[in-house]
Image (cartoon, rainbow, N blue to C red; front, side):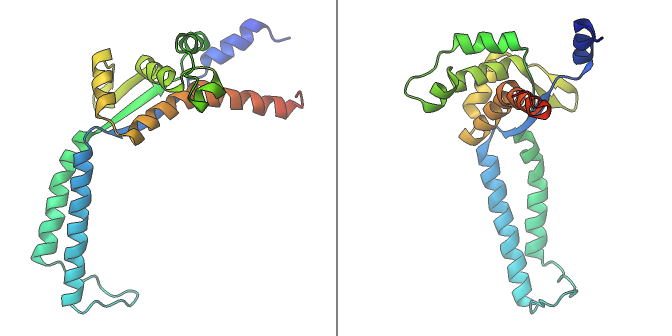
Length: 191
């Protein structure tokens, strides 16, 4: 017979679930890189027109012109700036008691349908959980961020990047656990 301690020991031996998210802290860098890509494509198109654009399969790629080579070099040199503007964050699932305490501390906004669905302030709970469970990944390993650094980071993010963080944290703490239970219940027909 399996004891509760055996079950808990096995569960504690499992790694805690995590989610990793890349965010851009400087949207201007992304815009400049997009402009450099357009510049490179235009230079390639101009080269193709000058050299008789051979569309046959297996045709050799035309050699680059000074304009194409310069655009490619400019894009490659800019990659360092791109890397400086990207931050990789890893979030770890909180224990159930911490998550429950967060949901109790952030009551739902009555005018927000998503909050009414879950019974708590979805964004505030997920943002606070991100600050409690998130680390920055770098070449040196994991770096804990201070509350001030988190606030500064959140202010620099686009809506898309902020939503990626919120969704990752919420998935770890609310959605994925509910899916595990549903799958187990369905698997044993104990619904």
